[in-house]
Length: 223
Image 1 (tube, helix red, strand yellow):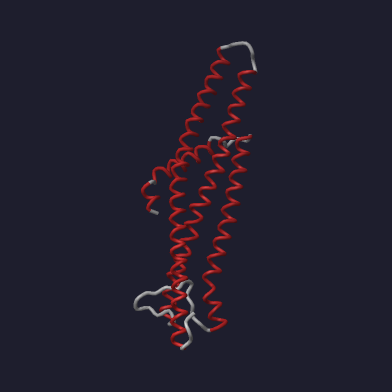
Image 2: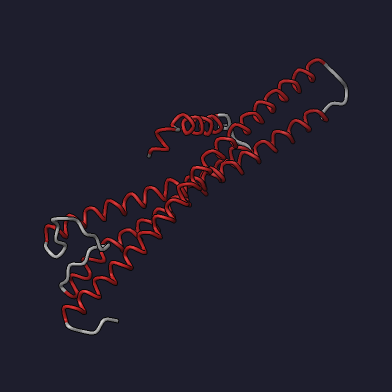
């Protein structure tokens, strides 16, 4: 969220460029077909990704309810200790459950926004390269259509060439924006991986400590 606030102009420029690209290719043709395929693939990726992430979050969140229904024990999603909150009481368990559900919701939205958003940008870049290639092909065909030189033909070719140069400049700007965003995505992914590793180690150690405390209370030998 902090990155989004600091670089809101970058994201605005990126969105405006994508809208400009779609508005410039509204007429039926190869470019509109390519953009349509790109939009369908992006929509399919978002739908599948959201289904997988949401299913994972829901199954994780309903696990405590399944455990309570089967064994009657209150087990939070993650072993968490807050001063003054007892997880074995209904009030404490509810507070921890809301907190864990909030974390899972942030995980789903964050992963969808980062990973799926970057996929959409890459797919859009591929589509833009096809559109630029089509423009180059059309320019070559226009130049070869008439071997005789004429003022009308030269003006038409010059106008088409200026449009091609503008497309190339826009494409360079777009790739720079995507590169900037991908660098931030890599940083976030590395940070998330390190955070996940720390949380896993914390959970493992915490579970081990709980197991040792239970063995001590029961008078059993320590493992």
